[in-house]
Image 1 (tube, rainbow, N blue to C red):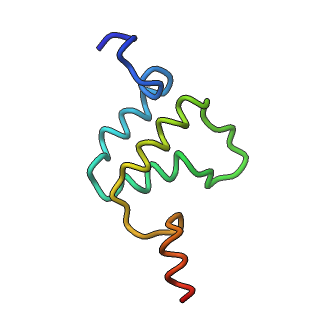
Image 2: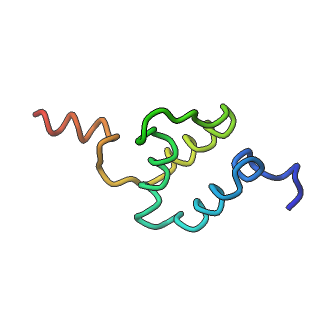
Length: 79
């Protein structure tokens, strides 16, 4: 694939793209993406805006299990 056809993730973080390919469609994918999108270790610099946008897009495509980042699950637990 030519550089002009690569996503920002593939171009700048090929190891992240590999991880996404490895986990996509599995139950581990949600955990993998949450680890990338949400700072769980503290003090992380974060990704550039174009990479962050792609990661958030992919995160929103997931058929996610209820979890700590599911606002509807949180709302249900308070009723």
